Image 1 (cartoon, rainbow, N blue to C red):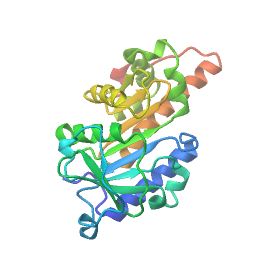
Image 2 (cartoon, rainbow, N blue to C red; image 1 turned 90 degrees about the vertical axis):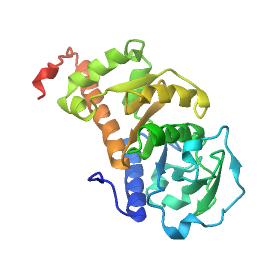
Image 3 (cartoon, one colour; image 1 turned 180 degrees about the vertical axis):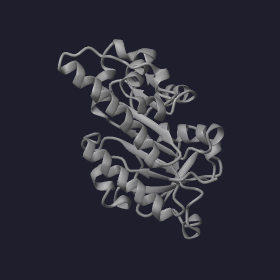
Length: 258
């Protein structure tokens, strides 16, 4: 059964990606070239693109992502800005095709835009999703100011403490994110180390905070992935306002939600 927000056409998927890129910029979560998006579009890629010759030489990957063999992914480009993705997606992103061994990729559309430097982390996650969460096609990484600020504090680096705060601020947070969020200690962006830590966190969460760096969400579609991060940000901003005005945080009882 198709998810109610899952688009039926390749063109509609690209439109949604462009729309969310605009949201990220307008939210202030995409300074300069911050953040990246990847979507497994294999089930939606037009026949005209499937066997299209590569636009540039094949690029070797740091490891073989076997589950992604012969898969097609939309990936935003390195150094590209979300504010530009929203207006001209294919001036700032590309479609890549993973080879049959899963250890290399080639760009097939629409221009030879080099993928994000965090491609290894994205591919690791997509590989895991293909094997364990095949319903999820999207990996969204962005820089929500409030979530990054909170990740700087010792108290809220603790996952249980952080989730108690987020769930306790607004009933929608628990409804939208019943698994809460995972917390990944700081690692150098774009490395396999941060990818491996993220995969562990995704075993029990759909959203992960990268300490001092940003946030990553997986979803069936780009709108769902954005909405989860947006819901977290709303809850956190509510708590910041309470603390700013000197009010103590008063959390409701979870059993009152249903």
